[in-house]
Structures are given as C-alpha cells and as structure tokens.
Image (cartoon, rainbow, N blue to C red):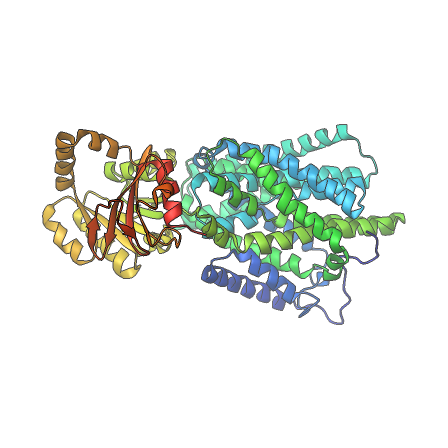
Length: 639
C-alpha cells in the first residue's frame, strides 16, 4: 500500500483549543457510555469509541491532536498505567488456579500464533516492510484489561474462562508493549538483528519487573507499618497506592522504553495477592479512576482516527482483520485449551471474544508519529506509507474487534449457553461453604457474603469469590451483584438474619428465587409468607437419615449430584420433541439418562411410553451428568 496521507495530523486551528470544553465533553460522554453499557448490557468500550469518532475532526471537530499539543503521549501513557495497574490488582492467585494450563498456553502458544500470523498477513497482503509487519504483529498480541474487564463485568462466565481471559489480557499487554518497542527500535535504527531482540526484550522486562517489585514492597510496608491517620486512613491509602502506580510506570519508562507497563503490572499483581489493609477501598477507588481514564484515552484516540486512511486500505485491510479475528484467534485458542477443562462452547466464546485494547492503539499512535518525524528529518518518504500501514492496521483491527466481538459478547455467551447461574450465598459457615463447593463443582457462578475475617480468608484461599460485609446491608448486597443473581440463599446460623436477607432479596431487589436456612422450625411460616423457600435443618437432617435407612443406594447417589450424577428440571421448548410420545422420543433420550417426571398443570406424572410431551411441560431428567446435559439440550435448546 502506498500513499501520502498521514493518519494523525496536526490540524491547523484559528483559535486556541478550549481544553476545558474538551475535558468536560470527554467526561460527560464517558459517563453516558457507562450508563448505556449498563442499560443495554454491552461493554462500555463500544460506546466510547463511537463517542470519540463523533467528537473527532470528521464530525464535530471538538477533539483534535493540536488540542493536546505535545502532551498526548504522556497523558495516554499515565492513563494506560492506571488501567493496567487496576486490572493487575484484581488478578489474584486463586483466579490463576482456576485455569492455569489454559492461561499459560494462551500467553505463550496463543501469543506466538497471533504474532507470527498477523505479521505474515500484514507483510504479504499490505506490502509492509518486514520490520513494520513484525511491529504490527507484536502490538496485536494484546487484548488487555481495557476491553476484557468491561466484558467480564457484564458476561459472568465460569471462573476458569474468566481467569484465562484476564490473565491473557494482563500478561499480553506487557508482552505486546515490550516486544513492539524492541522491534520498532531495531526498525528505526535500520538494524534488524534477531539476536538483539531477545536481549532488548529481556532488559526491558527485567527493568519493569524489578521496579514493580520495589514499588510494591515500599507500598506494602507503608500501608501496613506506617500510621496513616485513623480518620483518613482509607483515603490516604488510596492516594498512596495511586501515586505508587504512577511512579512505578514513570521510573521504569525513563530507564527503558515501554518497561513501565511491566512495572505497573508487576506491582499490581504483587499487591493484589498480599494481605493489604483497606483493600476494598483501594479497589473501589481504582475502579472509579479507571472509568475516567478509560473514557479519556478511548475517546481521545478514537477521535484522532483518520477514516480516510482506514478506507484506503481496501479489501487487503479487511482480509487482514478477518485473518486476525476469525482465523488466528480461534486457531490459537483451540490449540491452547486442549484438555484444559473448558467446554467446546466455552472455547468458542474465548475464540469469538478477543478484542484488542488501548495498548496497541496508544503505542501505534506514538510509533506512527515517530515514523513521520524520521521521514521528514532523514528524507525517507517511504516511511510515511509504512506509518499509515502501522496505524491503519492496528486501529482497523481494534475498531472491528471491539464492535463485532466486544459489543455482542453477552449475546454470544447467551447463544452458546455458557452463562452459569449467578447464585448469591449470605453466610460462609459450614452450611454455606458446603453448598458453595457443590455449586462450584457444577460450574455455577457463586458469590459469598461473609463478615468473619478468618472465614473470608479461608474461602478466598479455596478459590471462592467473597464479598466482605453484612448481608443485611443493601449496599453490600448490591455491590455483591444481587441485581444479576437468579438465586439468593440465606445460609447463616441466625434465623433473624436469614429473614431480613430474604425480605430484602424479595422486596428490594425482586430476586426470582430466594431460599432460606431455618434453624427453628417455628420460623418457617413467616418466611414462606414472603414467597421464600425454606430448608429446615431439623427436617432436612431427619429426611437424610430416613433416606439412608430406607433408600441407602439412592441416598448415596444423591450425594454425588453435580459430580458424576445429575438431576435437571427444565421446561420443554423444542418443537421437535413437543407433541411426541415418550416411546417416540426414545432416540432423543441418551443412554444412562431417564425422563423421570413430567409436571403439567400442578400435577406430577411418572410417564410411560404412551404419554405425550407437550410444550411448556416441566420434565425432570436424572442419570449420568453428561447424558443429562445432552437430554436437556434436546428438549430445551438455547439456540
């Protein structure tokens, strides 16, 4: 591809840009984007990019590069530092334990496939120089927390899936930034020596990790051993942590280009996995800051996209995007997740959700501008075309993948039927913990609310998502995600607490199904009057003992439910199964599975071969877990 258009131009203006108006517009549209994202259940990044295009030179002309002068790269860099640090702070070791093999393979095998495959596509289809093709390939390794975190906030996939995506995003941001910087330095120096790549990469990584560890150690010592003033300790802890992240990024970047990303990622991961006071206050503060900086950098950089440059790439540019998103991504994911415990549908979801984030956009912008500067200073006009390829390819991939992969992520998850049931358990004592373990083994999305610090630590160490706080506090319930919960279980040892939790769940949050543990049988009636299902400890124990006496085989099998055996009750929605008799449906019911019960019009029927299944019937399957899942798919398809 050849041409003289410059993707990021210093546009002439007649008056000094009104920075106050620009900042206010970006913040307002950032907040609006978040509101729309919550309303329509799509990642906010989609609305942020659209907002940037509207504010940019081609539409309203509010945001132009001249408005920022020479400070754009600094602002973007510090914003990236905050976002990467905030994402790394949430990357707990217990998450990594959920899917360690898949995560490691995605950041090694998957990254290598993406790097080499993208570089080859850019080299052969767009006619880029080999060095520029390798830079583009390195940059487009990155997915990153800027796009993955908003997706996972609205798509509550199973923890192994989320852990793999989060780990890939954090680590690949670091890999992409450093690898691209090393290659670009070699390209601009016109000295591409493969032996220097590894040295340069290792040096930058070592500087970043070293500075990150040092800053994390200092922050940990200050937060745990220095009196921060009892009245303002949480606020001071937030500010100290915030300052530490920016210092880590700045110092590392000063020593070695792009080492700052590795520094903040390292500091965030370390601090996220040590015993840190005021952790929740710090994480909440970081979340707020992330929203603001995410809004700024996505809107600002999207506003600077030269649409003409993207269009000039033509069919070859589209082909590169198709190869990156629909060939390399699925190939890398499926190769990386062989025998990892992820289902075929979950692998399809990870393959379909690989939008590129702000790291490639920010670095591509800086590299393109530097190439233009070198072209002017050294009289190398060919570099202008190469800068267009670099910036144009990266931004085209970002825009298309965010719009077509990030935007419909929840819809994709729903169509693939991989969204687990969100269950909120209040109380992580023996009963709550045992229930959480069983639900987790079945792949449900379980969140536990608990006040006891020792129980919280124990539950988190076991890999459970735990929200610290009082389950009778509406703010705690809301922050734990009760708005997305299908079931709330009040499992504490106190009936009054369980009653209040049940009341809040039913009346304040309109939860579909509420179940309460009852320690005193006299408290069953008040709960059932609220429409709450109750489980009496006395009756349940007696029932279990009776089953063990009269039905020992069934009693033993019931304890295995969710492990090897399963029982599922679903509503018949399939047109292929409705209107046919049980005898006619024999081939639709897998071996090792039985249709045990049909419920219709409040009547329960043990069916024989002549009973006809109708749409809307509630049917209960029991048998081996995989066979039951197949039967459920046939009688209640999700596509």
